[in-house]
Image (tube, rainbow, N blue to C red; front, side, top):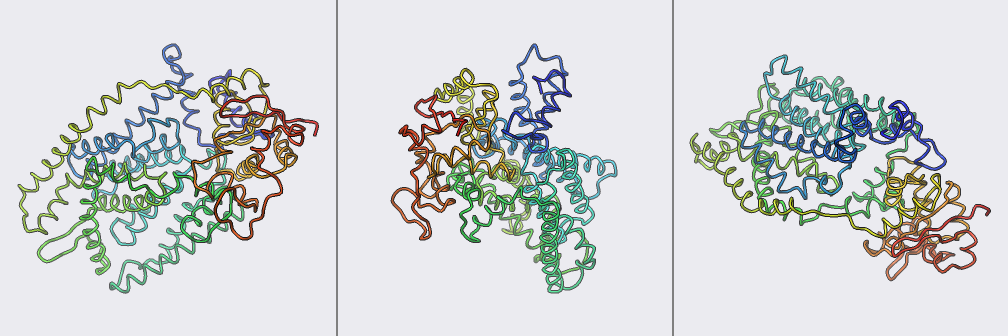
Length: 616
């Protein structure tokens, strides 16, 4: 966008891009979530700042500024829940001291989630305020506007938006079913989710992955089911429980039906790899699917490591979180039982002996939100950043909440108003002092460190490509490396890490045959079918030791191709010995069958670049 002579030419270059994927013209605005970069490029061109700041620093400072908004949103959410600014301060401190587990922005700046999560936090803050009873009409409208804008921006900036909002829709569904949220407000929130996602769909030129999302099918199903079952919240406890189970069944069946119909009509396959991965991950049958196994073998998509809890406990966050979670879960169960026992629409209260247990709608929402996203984080480490940041909010709210301390002190028969006041202020202040004492010196030391990128082999490769290959040359290799080739050299690629496109997944699997046991003429034919001029082989993949046997990239390819894996260990009985040696190893011997198709033009300790012959 910055290199184009005009903004319109920049837009045209993005919509009709033939410089990224070989032999294809791609609409980047449709395929990728890059509107944020487009917006920044317009700002940079319009504002008189070109003389004072380089584009890359403008980009970095904008993202870091967005993280400040993120922390502010967490602060406000905690304050709204507890009623004191001290809670917000504690949430912010916990977020910073646990930054290894709450954000990835300090070491991977341009991640889509670093753009999206600040807007998600703003949305949660706005929903927390929106669920308060007796809002003034103006406040009600402004809050709905804030929820819509933040939902829309969250959806626009991250390709996984639909899955996160599906979790949020499940939160609303659970609370609405248990009569813990006003039905009218829940309907508003369902509608905002649908509207925001459909607007993003239009902006992304009717992106098929959005149209076929489970979120759209689920929200429509819930709204239809509610119309069909109007008397859902009446009757005795067992009667209501039966109606709820039927309601759940109807919504589930309707969601799957609508989703299948939409996908069949539009012939959608964009997200099928995600469902294959989920099916295998949760034990619904083993798979030999290459794409699913590629996810299963990545540490980021595995279970949350136990040492995460050790780090969170070191700052006292995990202990505080479990304490607050235990009390609020007990209160929620009591209120849910009461709501199912009495068919009234009164405020959620439960009489236990001489004490009344209550749970505010905004507290109930944040409770179920943290539980569901907690399960998501425990099952998939990559998603822990959605949970840990909210953990800071929820734990700090509970320690500063008069309702939490009132319930606890009443249960242990030590209740009086002065004790509540002492507890809700003294404990957070003591924790803040502890955090400052233990972590402040270390944070100051970190800020004083100046680090420099050092990867001489990769730098040498990029410099060689820039100096020795034509500008229109097409490169094949691993997804991660080719992303760097595109960024550093501008060359055209056969494949890259945007794995949400089914045809690109097929390309990637075909290109990765360079690490499989295939004949040189087969590999050459595959690569040339994508217009490849040069292929880059990496020793770190060819001789990989980072993953266990069965999860190395070469093993995944062998299994997908029906070949036995290398090394000691068992193989499935139907796997056969390959008819050819491993391509990435054998090509280095410079034997005639290989030199007839491939000529080595560059080599260092890490990379080997081969030029493909064109006359074969």
